[in-house]
Image 1 (spheres, rainbow, N blue to C red):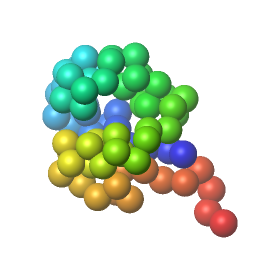
Image 2: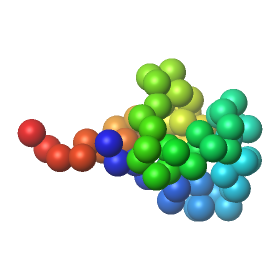
Image 3: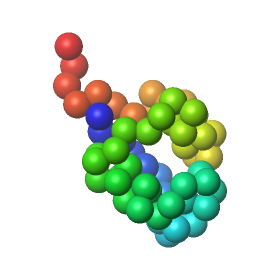
Image 4: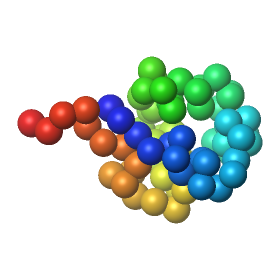
Length: 66
């Protein structure tokens, strides 16, 4: 699954540590999310969407359609 977390974080000029604090996760988790190495749990996905004031579908995208 692809996501726009890195771009959204950069738009707000937040560090990975700052985003991690806002989400209640470690900086390493933010790195893994941004690099597509980790798909968040549903509660974390909702928290990410809430933090960026977006819908989940606006942030997370399937690797391929179909």
